[in-house]
Image 1 (cartoon, rainbow, N blue to C red):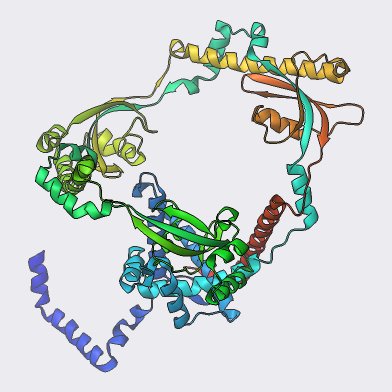
Image 2 (cartoon, one colour; image 1 turned 180 degrees about the horizontal axis):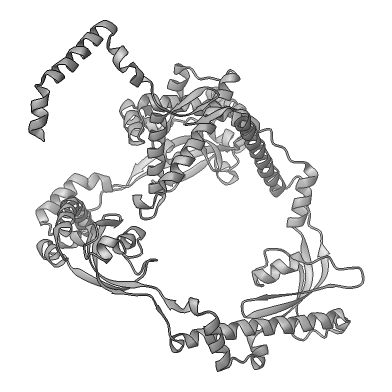
Amino acid sequence: MLQDIRDNAQSTIAKVIVGLLIVSLSIWGMDAIIGGFTGEPEVATVNGKEITEREFLRTVQLESQQRLMQMESPDPSLLNEDQIRKDVLDALIREAVLTQDAENQGLELTDADIDALITQMPQFQVDGVFNRDRFVATVRNAGMGVAEFRESMRKNYVVNQIRAAIAQTGVMAPENIAHLLAIQNQTRDFRVQILDAGSVAAQVEVSEADVESYYEENKSLFRKPEQVDAAYITLSRGVLAESIEISEGDLQAYYDQRSEAYAREERRASHILIEAGSEAQATLAEIREKLAAGESFEKLAEAYSLDTVSAREGGDLGYAGRGVYDEAFENALFALEPGQVSEPVETTFGLHLIRLDDVRRSDVPSFAELREQLQDELAQERAGERFAEIRAQLADAAYAADDLKGPASELGLEIRQAEGITRDGGVAPFDHAGLVRQLFSEDVLSEGYNTELIDVGDSVSVVARVTEYHESRQLDLAEVEQDIRSALVARKTREALAARADEMVAELEGGAVNDLDGAGWQIFEAQGRNASNLSPAVVEQVFAMARPGDDAPTIGRVVSGNQAAVIVLDAVNEGEADPEAAEYQQLQQFLAQLEGQREYTAYQQYLRNTAEVERN
């Protein structure tokens, strides 16, 4: 075949084709030949503007990586590629619609604006100063180029400006807030009698005929699924670390290299916390102006900070190391020099101005104190280096081998056994969906091959093979009789409890409620929704019951688990709603945000419905 190609390449026909190409290029230029291929393929157009295939595929890749990161045990085979592609295209269309809307409203960022935003981002700073190398590395690690990142910022920033403007217009009528709080804070007076399983035990009887009948009617429930027994090899960094020997000299050298890192650094900070919102920037400007004018940070913290505890101490938070504060707060604090005040830092609590007051470092622990920790760290480090090498060897050996004995012997690894693995999985490591899917694949289950080497955890890999297959089978009555009997006893107990509760309700509604002597009844007065001394089912039923009339209480019952409760609701006490209370203000803000978000969602949908979208 290859010789034919070589011969034809020297033929007269080939030379004629080459000659024609040369003439065409000389007359019309390269564009005339390949011009039809330079236009970038598109996957959709939105109001005439293209969404390119390159942008679509890059976003699909990023979304796939993001979904893998969210998995407890990342497994690419679990990704639904079709759904990801659909979700990504929908998101790109929505983004295009919103971006075009921002452009139509005259909102845009200049290159200088984008530069200013980027240089202020803490994740791109080193010691509080923008670092280009960190910026480029962070962007590339996210799978983007610098130009793509800047363009993404340009789009997202202006879109978020519109979103924030609409979301902040959300309002909630005061009477609605008061009504909701009144319901939330409502309390009720009631009496409860609990009926347990013992009270109806004499009425519950399950015969052999009942068990047999249930078995015959529900045979499909009593099938043992197909199962496999498996042999497997586990390779883990932890096990490798245990087998690594480290000399005293290596430990001492590692200590000398790392000792400074073991000195714990703590920073003493003060902060002023203000509420995020429409007035936040004005408040921040006012505080910073007063700081610049010479007013003390402590006095301003007392006057402005929402953190009332630290405000009494001039905003002082004391000393703390890493891992104590919110990530954004910590990053800003550890980027400051003593006496320096940060730019505004947003956390879930609000906006902070942070001042670094002092830095202290603890003494470096002695070699003897750190010896065990050093041993473990160095062993883990070296095991990590060995893990990648041995993993590759195991993958190759297991792929080529007819069993696991050879690879296990070659690499000094142990073969383990597992039984009763179904298509839904089994004990670890067969709780990993990808490994189970491989185990039940045609090649492994029927052809007798080993599975591929599957990563089932952080630096833990497994290869397995089926040792025995067990077909699905119908379980005999004797094998499941006790389970059926227990299920029938539980069902008949609930039925008997419900019947007894219904009898009591009928008696009470017939007038017996006026003759209650208190025996067995628990009395609750002004009980709220957060009752901890009653089952949630009882509390839910109490607050679901209709208000009692002027002359008669409301009667109800609830059956839950292995008990029933008969309830006599005597009174409903209206809750309070103080407009000055913190809970009122919090609910008002929360509901306004929800309403604003609802309005923005409706605005998005309007733009999407009126856009001209063509999918290719």
